[in-house]
Each structure stands twice: as structure tokens, then as C-alpha cells.
Image 1: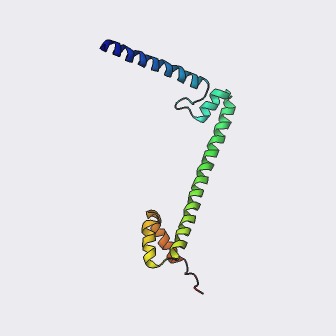
Image 2 (image 1 turned 45 degrees about the horizontal axis):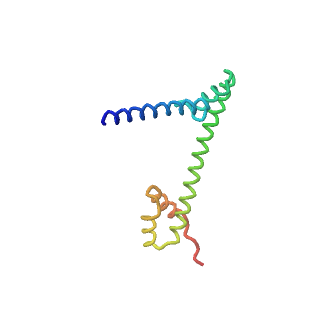
Image 3 (image 1 turned 90 degrees about the horizontal axis):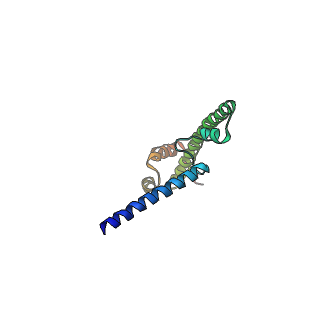
Length: 129
């Protein structure tokens, strides 16, 4: 009985490995997945059969674009942080001192608290006409 069970398990493992091998071969041969460790430029080179000049030019475009995207991301994060700080400071300004303590504790991210308080002290109080 135990011998039949071991044989069944061995057949199942071999069948699984064979199916996995066939499936991965199919997927990679149809370019449905990238090869592990293959970057976009290497994939373009492999699929488009780039000339050396094309490969250099495309690589330069990619590098130039990468630095511009990183710069745009930094600018966006800075602008977003600035907008959030302003919003927190404006909300905080409408609250009583007791409400401000609760607001600071429960709603303002810890890394923003000092900046919000500083921005609030630098902002003139609104007119109470």
C-alpha cells in the first residue's frame, strides 16, 4: 500500500515539473514575461534587434527621462508636503487650544507637527470682524 502511495506522489511531482517546464517555456517564448534580470533596454534590444547606434540613442533617452522623472517626483513631493502643511495649519488655526492639542495628537502626522506649529506661529491671525 505504501509503495503505491510513494509511486503516486512521485508521478504527481514529475507531472507537475513537466507542466511547469512547458508553461514557462511557452510564456517566455511568447514574450509574455520578461526574462529575470532583463532591463527594458535589453528587452528592446532582444525583441527589436537594435543596431549599436539605436541602442546608444535609446539608452540616452531613457537615462535623460529617468533623471527628469526623478526631478518631477521630488518637485511633486515637495509641493504636496507644502500643501498639506498649509492645510493642517489652516485647520489648526480655527480650533481652540484644547482642540489643537487633540488635533495635533490624532490628526497631524508626527513629522508634520513642529512644522505646522511653526507655520501657524508665522501666519498672522485672521481678522475677527
